[in-house]
Length: 93
Image (cartoon, rainbow, N blue to C red; front, side, top):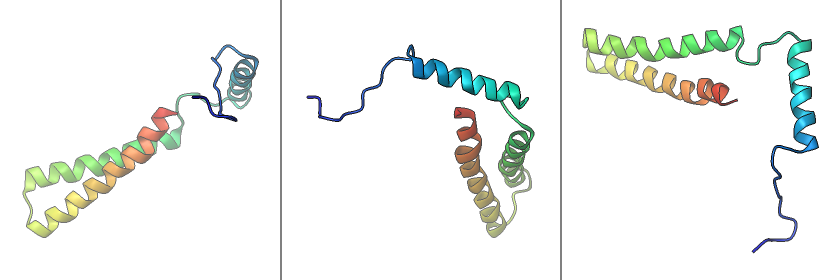
């Protein structure tokens, strides 16, 4: 049952979609910006991946005391959350 005032999405073959796509493309061309990535995105990705991988490897290789392992696992968890919320978010755009 269709409710009154319900939003209906039309396919991508309409004037709005064509105009939006051309304006976005024009923005990237005029500002000489990459559509895929920029320097800060690459740096953020490297930092977060390193913050996940290095503590993980440190726990496996050095087998530190429990409280140090707990700190390293906490860092891994925070880095994983950052990867999920930041890097993966950027990738979805």
